[in-house]
Length: 299
Ligand SMILES: Cc1cc2nc3c(=O)[nH]c(=O)nc-3n(C[C@H](O)[C@H](O)[C@H](O)COP(=O)(O)OP(=O)(O)OC[C@H]3O[C@@H](n4cnc5c(N)ncnc54)[C@H](O)[C@@H]3O)c2cc1C
Figure (cartoon, rainbow, N blue to C red):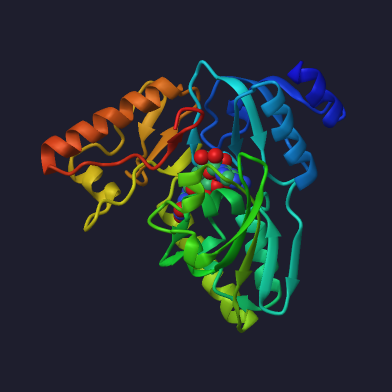
């Protein structure tokens, strides 16, 4: 049985019927059948072998900061690649990091070495793997600007090293997303800079984030992608939707581009609110808002 095999591999550190609300920044999501957190590549490869042997469906997650999980939960295995998979090695201007490291932690380590160019990432609450998958970005910087190569694991269990030019980075996507690969490690390159200046830029960006974003409430960040030539938040506000509430899901009062969880929001409430926002914005301005947040286990 798959559970016995996983219990053996993870020395019984296997979570069963684990509420996904505990693992998402939205604090939303029903139970997942089984959740494991590998601590190294070998354990991850063996986990995939078990899935293959028992025909077990699996999904990969990082820090859960860009996903919505349905209220009914996930009848599958979730492999969480997060802080237990986060060794970092820095040599001169090259940083080699495992995919579970949080960007906030990585940006601090990079800053400590007086390396410039990662300030944009300091406030993005995800892992390196999730950020590469999404080509996460902020304040003019994107992962594609700093990633030199990425080591991935294919579904067939093969490890490939992909150079930046072949990663097909685009707005909130990459080839990793297209192929369904698992990010294991990445090599990032920065330039030597001045520690005080790097710190000042990072502090400035943090201040901007704190003043503009509803960081005191659970969310998954920007709910929608930026439509070409517009800002989703501005369109939503101009359509009169700021503060619109459905159950405990609300278009944030502070930043209309965020949907927040006021306490007990369900996935269904968030999805319904997303639909209303999309419809009103399209009816008002003829612009289609594409969802950025992913429905985990479905797409
Ligand atoms: C308050 C707040 C602010 C935010 N601000 C920003 C911002 O400024 N810019 C921005 O781009 N995003 C932002 N986000 C969204 C989110 O932080 C990013 O998309 C982040 O990169 C997601 O990383 P994660 O580890 O949490 O991924 P998860 O949410 O866990 O997963 C996202 C997707 O990545 C895949 N994935 C995760 N890890 C791996 C891996 N190792 N290998 C392969 N696939 C993987 C998952 O399968 C899933 O499909 C914000 C979110 C919040 C809550």
